[in-house]
Length: 173
Image 1 (cartoon, rainbow, N blue to C red):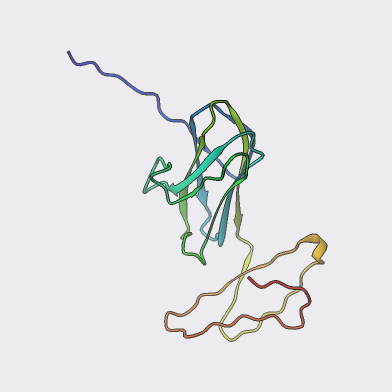
Image 2: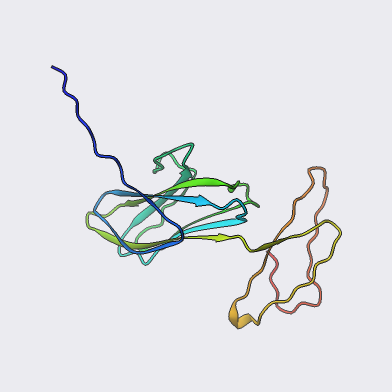
């Protein structure tokens, strides 16, 4: 006797930026899809305001449609209610846009857990040119201003030097 059975489709939620106060049932997984912009310099995926222990996994949707503990491009598995964070940037070669990410949130608790999920892109950056100085200014330090720059290093480059001049209390990272 052959009997056909169907399993319900796994719900996939699209996310554009943030979703607040999501409840995940005990010992379960929720999936989100995020389309990274073609001009993204950096993508920060964060789960915050946790009421219990969850883990977060990310993968390229075209490579792995269901990321998890043993199959993922990146993972954040902090204990307890510590925030989960994954950051990909072009500088680390972990981000080559455009790409579609599948994000998995796994509840490790035997009770429901609430969390907020945000995906933040840095797309406001200035492309620097070789041997061309660039002048800019920051707001005061109490406003926590940051500016982002991109620079393509030639494959045959021996050294790259970045410097700030006439700047007080400026961090260059």
